[in-house]
Image 1: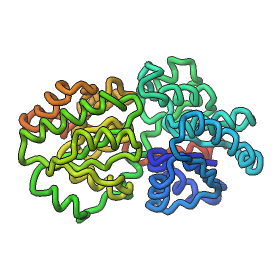
Image 2 (image 1 turned 180 degrees about the vertical axis):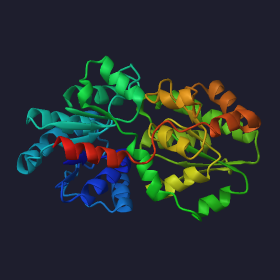
Image 3 (image 1 turned 60 degrees about the vertical axis):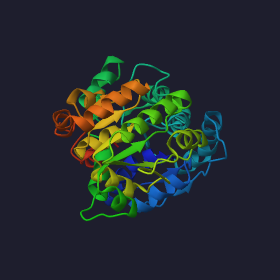
Length: 362
């Protein structure tokens, strides 16, 4: 059984779902979604042609971490008891993953953690994701680490080496099926007469003044560079929207658009000049497309990209973002150094490796 509930999880788990289903002689695959995200989750399921066997549909208006945790934990119990899976696979660091893994643990069902071993070392950054991923790794029996550094993190915590497998990141697998030649979109047509910047921002710890500073820095830089246009697929969180409209409304070279389907978003990334984000998954995806990424966070659980030179951690201070963004627009050598760095996150065959391992272990 694979359990996931958010857009980022779905992007990275759907390639694995489809790989396991291709091996119907080995596996009976059950997909359970929680609906922690609703519309954004459904878009990804449609893109990858994945139909859930079970949908907990837990999302509620103004839901809190308490709501998500309790609803997943209580609602998935009957599903797990009915299906009695040999293993429950969860992904990464969402509250869905934490609660589903905990439910499986309570029922003595083995847990496999896809994208295991990522760490910032600060349990409040990102919040609550750093806690979630550490907690899932305490519960798990199998660890599918995306990188060697993630494996080392797990070993340093005493996880058994024979249960840790370095597979690459399944997010890179997804890109192999979504990027297409000749892709076009009305917003891309608008942006292509200049350098197009792609923006995402949504992290809980950045809400409030940090997010206002991020947006002010972006607007300052763009006002000084008339050849630059930007697309910001704005998150559904009302607090994010309030900050974005307060700082970015009225600037005609920056478009706020509704969240893009994964197929569109991946192709927007491929067409962009550079990306500013506080997301986690984009830090893995963009380097495989040769796109420099400025990470608007104080910490990252993906230091491999920083070490490789594809990512730059710039924090949330307005002046720091302004300086880094300006440098990449004005300094061709600095831009080229990031754009030409190698991708440390895999070769697009992580799902195949995980399926091979499960075939031997189960």
